[in-house]
Every structure is written in C-alpha cells, then in structure tokens.
Length: 60
Image 1 (cartoon, helix red, strand yellow):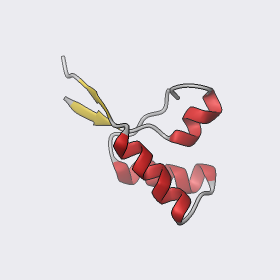
Image 2: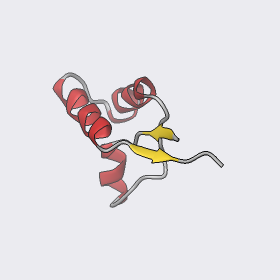
Image 3: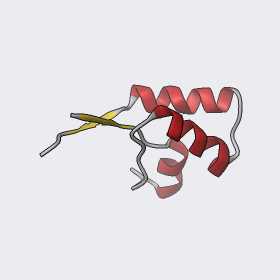
Image 4: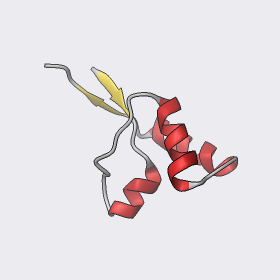
C-alpha cells in the first residue's frame, strides 16, 4: 500500500476531499507554504492534520 496526504486547506475550499494529493510530506508542506501562503504554526497544524488523516491506496 502507498500513503497519500491531502491538503486540509484545499479540502475546505472544495467542500470535501480535494482531488490533489501528495505522496510525500515535504511536497505537501511546500504546497501549503507556496499555494496558500501559510507559515509557522499554521503549517505545523496543517501537517499534523495530514499525518493524522493519512490515506492508504493499494497497488494493483
């Protein structure tokens, strides 16, 4: 199985699960900082949310 992380800001803006997903935490962190302009504690909170709500997909 493979871990995928979703951006909580994108999820809130889309009203559910956003289509955009990330396979690595560093890519999600960069997305949150650049796309949404968050920094410091806001990024830490968003990353904790992503780690606490990680999804797993199965390889076929």
